[in-house]
Image (cartoon, rainbow, N blue to C red; front, side):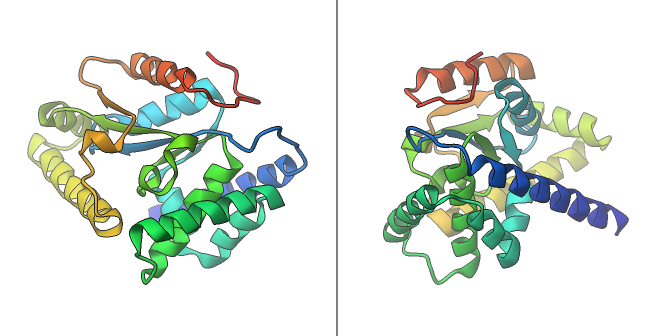
Length: 236
């Protein structure tokens, strides 16, 4: 129970700090509204979380993991605060994205998807962020994000989970199978898509033979090869 409370407190602190940062950034004027983001879909145990943290540090951009995005999407009050932190120009961009998504998916009877789309769209409109999970790469237009799929063979993933959580091979495999099933079902339900279809992404990376640093380097090359209008991120 304490662990759950600790996670909630951490999320609240992170979101509060992020809102303050965005409020300050509203005063900045950009020549072009395009401030790119990286979206990460992943197979459990593939090392995507460590990779996301590495990219966030290397590129000096904000990181929103699966739990934070999910928590914000489930709270209308917090979600509205995230949207309210947008300036007038970015709210217009968000409205355009939502309108396009609505026409494409026809799934607005689901209240959670509505909140999720607004939250992911608001984060992307603020820009300079990494969003892990929650179908972010399916929500956002391809022109504003680099969409990644991080994978690895089952034996590698079992080894990663086993060492990360101190469990047996059997328990590691059980956790992977369950989590992967849930993630695939989520993407199928809300976006009618296959999580593992590489055509849904700009880059699919198998982490088997790469350290976190080496994998981050490959992704940064892909990120910097796109013609982004880059205002504050120093290319590395």
